Image (cartoon, rainbow, N blue to C red; front, side, top):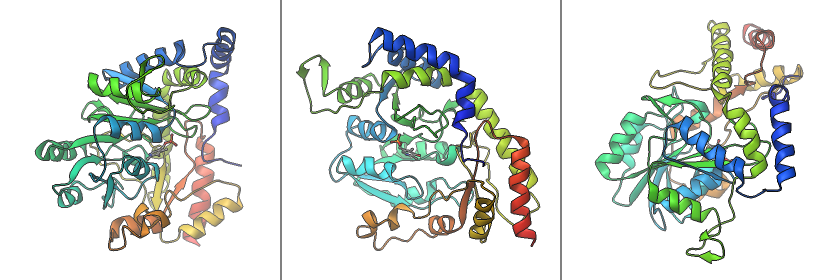
Length: 365
Ligand SMILES: *Cc1c(COP(=O)(O)O)cnc(C)c1O
């Protein structure tokens, strides 16, 4: 059996460090915003090259709190992609803003700067690009649009921890960036977790307040906040994995490049690297008109595979009514033909050959 992500293999490599850290935490009983959260925030800020990193309860919360802190609210339009996980748009809805979905680039699956430009109205307040599957969005173009139109830039970097563009970390280029530590993400905890980064002291102060019941000083509350703190136990795990994140991401790139090399002669579309930044392959996603046949053959051999994402956001039940007139042809085509193969730092070359062999069997039959 080959899973999408082999979390067990990763755990084996950090077992001693993690168990020591967890035991210490239990011994010390500093469970909420303890020393590991503080240390992780510092280490993450250094790694990501930002002034502030604030641990929160999930990636969804990271985006939600970032939008509040940046002053996005009722009736504001936020331009984003429909080819993403629902949480991107949920965060926009939580603050009462309107997600304006625009089409993607057919090769990178990332939001199209041309489409963004066409969607800007006087009500547009922010752009929320997603660095989908680990490939940085076209930040040069997007940042230029933000500057030109005075828009906030809030990056959904939930799938791209460690990916670099223009010499900077994804998530660290805009006014604020959100990361997810959902276990299967490139940097994953042993449960939920998230992070907001920013270079603004003001935004950082607001996020710190918002994640902790609107409070700077215990039992004194300035705004209605949330209970959204990064858990101390998760911070222990994240500190161990952060030390190794470059190694993990390099291993992912190796897997992806071997897949692409072995499938170069097959009639399917392997992931495209636009060269603007470095893809860290949260997912290895291809396009084929025969995806159902391929997936069936893989599943028959106990190889996991998945469709990210089968229904774009503008066609989801929850958005159907408000997006009734919206057509996003590239997004719709990609959703109808995409599928993702197992990828993680611990997928062996033998397994990659085996997986490609099965795909070859389907396509050459
Ligand atoms: C995972 C993910 C999120 C949400 O993260 P959670 O930690 O699960 O709340 C948001 N956006 C994208 C693109 C994601 O992949």
